[in-house]
Length: 240
Image 1 (cartoon, rainbow, N blue to C red):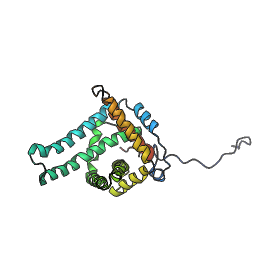
Image 2: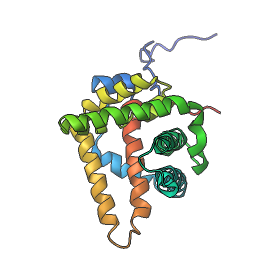
Image 3: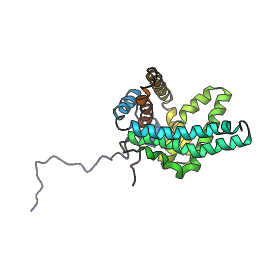
Image 4: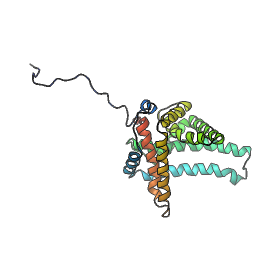
């Protein structure tokens, strides 16, 4: 017969709620309570470089080659500043931007501890329409901000930095992803700005000795971006 131990310390029925995902959450990011800092983002990114560089460079090169093809095609065909050139550029957005989303998500998933592969760059063509719409809208609003007073354009260029991964990773709508990124990064805009400045300086210094250092610093840039996303918004578990 089971008897309660009279000397046992009292037990509480209150259990802590487990974390939903690695890192932060959308609610905490919007409230400004999600924690991240520049030093941790860069140091954690550096620690995760091993085994990531090859896959990131593979994905990045695929994206850059496709984007360059559509950029130079009007020049090759002698159709600069024509309606055909505009249509080629528009087609380039639909073809290349899902690849860019793949590059960003490679870093986001690695930051969350997921296994990644360079072929993951092709994952997001199922969301090609919203990805293209978001890319066009962000470009238009940022360009408009630059034309007006420059500073609004600079603000938006940084504030919309996480709109694309929010669209694909959180399955948000176009405007919802843009506004979620803008509102969350507004809470830490200067910190994020200085993170990017720091990473750009690292890229510049690493490029001095024949560009060899870029082998490490380019993936480092991507991973630091992913670390901040993880700490701000959290990352959903992978589904088979």
